[in-house]
Length: 250
Image 1 (spheres, rainbow, N blue to C red):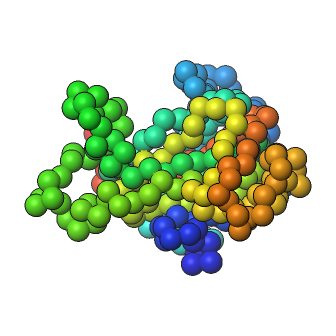
Image 2: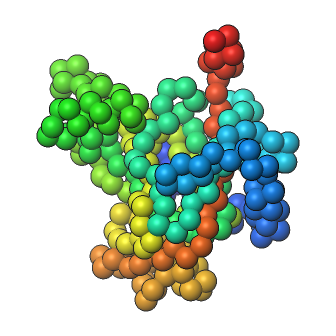
């Protein structure tokens, strides 16, 4: 997996063209043909939360080709975003094994990763507490109490990735525990020097998804990714058996 590491954050992996066009089209058809009762509409997107049999080949492919999951994937969220929709920065929390695999279908987007200090350092404590509860962010540490990786947290930087159709994004360990991830609610994404995979901009240009396609080696001036169509993401995770067993007892 080393060849898919993005930038200096070595716990984020991006695999372009993970799925063929035929595989993508088949998945989109299956998602769109799901019973209406399977969809839950939220303010900024709609989603399905189930593991249908037609997703089994995909989860098996992710497991075998990445080797990052300790047991079969048993939790999948199907998210559908229209242009301008997104999801606020969040952390998936301790319920799951700390690896996430996200398959992107349809219109490309940009996912941002922000270190926890973006929330920890909010000036108003009440606002922090509200967001802490909402996002399941771990409690703040004092410098004396904090482990070394938490002490260094304030030196972490925002990063982002362009997610093209058919790609697979994986993140684990530090990227899972020390960062929040989200998608801005906007119809245009600025592509700046936080982008860890600027090489894909040439692909965007070929597909007429980006304006004034830049040289990937010169990202100081922001470029624009326009979100022109529906995006579907398949977020795959693993709930450890002991946790799943406890949930089923409730």
